[in-house]
Image (cartoon, rainbow over all chains, first blue to last red; front, side, top):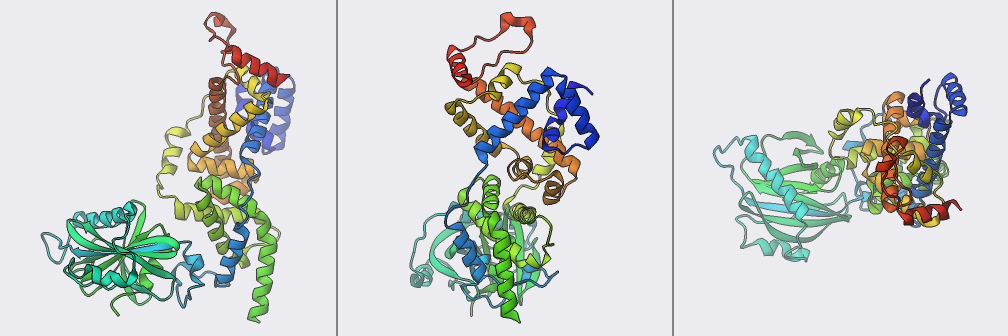
Length: 267
Length: 218
């Protein structure tokens, strides 16, 4: 048993995780080796320093109450084996809490963004910039041009080639808080901001005769939802009346999918 | 039956899970490196744990179970770059250098007891920990702060015990090297090389460092 070997396993030795024989052999060696003893002392001292430095963190005072409130609002149980992801039914505003450790939704209605070249089939390369732009619009976090929900639709009247009807959310507590214009792939877009219990979600809706190509599609909650993942963001898209509504934000995939599927668009 | 069962479940959950709130928050803080995100992560994890509470096996380690849920929630939700794992099993998987630390520096650190020194070291440890790659940080937090056994860590992270062992070794080693390096720079310890052969080349010992060490030792 060499000193090099000892040094390599000193941590495991201190953790008491070596097999008993090796543990005893190490102990024996260390007793007779000043240098390894010194190493062991150092390793111990390091552990002490480490625990003192980063251990003993206490949860903030309000956290327990916050968790309890969230538990109150949460559905009681999940059928074993059921995929918890795809359930978003009959959520009242209170129940929305677990869903949305998330609080603001941004919704972007994109102006006419025709796909150059082919009208019924766009290539991946022409689609990705759209999603990139949606994510960029979300990330840029610019202030709203209009901050009053009532003024959102009128605000866009003469600025876009299509009327803007903000999506509504009945089954999750999402509040329209403002809107602004943005440029997406060279076209004009309407950006709608929603607040979902304190966090922001960005929904991008773009004009186009086809659904966003080169994306995946699934039927969710009675709606067709396209989705694409880019730069770590998940972007589900709903289509209605020639417009694409793309949703994104700092939410997990499940939440975004639920938000997208539950949005009431055009009715 | 619904209501009574639900209440019982809720009570049992609160009794079993809430005592681990500090551990969950501490770990979340180390994983996310942000107090606000840590709170979100704790809340999400506990909600998930409550939903799957029926699947918890009584008698097993509640804390480890909760930490597993939290770690997985973190990985699924917050980790964006999946490739990190590859990087880590690649280039950095090489064994770290052994015995490169100066013995004098190690000795100094072992006996660093002056309050000011310890505070400096504590700040450096925090920084070094936060700078560790996520997978190593997770292991360190679970093993060295939460004191889970290797088997439990392996179960939480979903890797073989041997991997836990080698990653822990590498992570601790790199923390220690960083610490020694910083301690030398701060003058808490001196970094004279071990080898007596080239005493002529030994870097000048800062008088300040010498005094501080004396104070610390005394």
